[in-house]
Length: 443
Image (cartoon, rainbow, N blue to C red; front, side):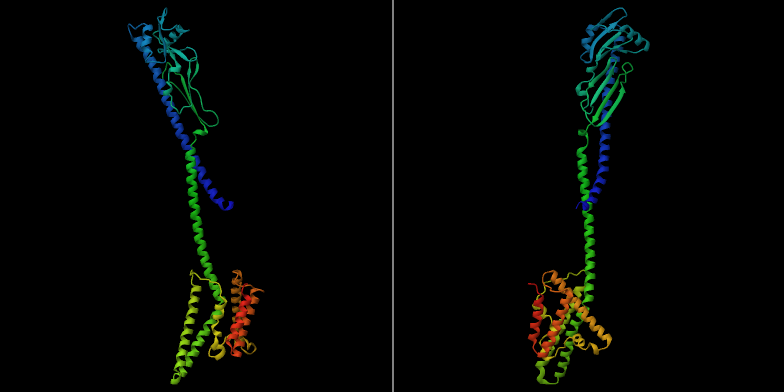
């Protein structure tokens, strides 16, 4: 059974594996594109906030009378949640909402040399942005992004600040999987902090539903293909069996040719005999009853010949169904019409010609003797085939080989025919024939 299903299993695997690979690659490409897109969104938001920080410092530097840092910070902090302190240094004095950072003077000098603000470390979680004008602001890196602003497709998110790397989103997925990672600096010259985003595609994120659907669809396609092939093979086998059956029927016909010729010879000879007798009795007005009886017998023999020909056409017809029925011993005895009462008692119907010629084998020409021997050989082969088929179906019980039983049966029937005709007793033939069939009949 395994070998019979092996081609279908291999076909299913050959169809399944490329589909699984294609679905996996497509899903990987889709998730990678979403990851890159979401990373770009976070990068854009952080870059906008960095540029916003520069704009605030530039605005304060442009004011001729800026407000005091202590009063300015409360007004800026609601709009900029990441802002922790604001201050200004004129080189000698510091005014601000918090203490000045270490290294402020050097940062101001670098900013003036660069012509733009510069970043100064303020611990591991924030930084000071110092402008050339002396204005400075402290930014808390943890407040740059609200949790709702971080897309769910990102697994880890960090930002390289002057004081070290700050994790904006800690990595949650662990274990085996495909790693997606993207690094890109912020788009602000004063705050070119590198943004790192990552995601691990663990087995839980793989397209299992699509794979299962493809497995079911490919299995259905292979099953349909297998059923189609089997239906074609079944139809081809049916055609071959029908052709072999037709050939077998033709072979059987060849084996039965002698017996069929014998059966046809009997009614045709009887027709000629009855027609001749009727013709001779037409001149005698007292023989009208016998003439009518002869004509009726002629018609019956003609119908019998037609039945034989009809059965022959059914047998050799290509593809025609052959009706098979169990053999009935009584019908078998009744079918031996050439041994009926007229043949035995009255002698008006001919006896088997080959049986009469067989008794004179040494006296007849060799070519006729060969034909007679061939007739008996064919008849024996046909009877043996019938006995073998009946034995296989449990209708006959053979005590010897089918060929030996066929010769015994044929000899018994021909001997019973001669004996019954010699004594003029049709019942003797029927008794012997029934005994021969009863001997073969299964218990």
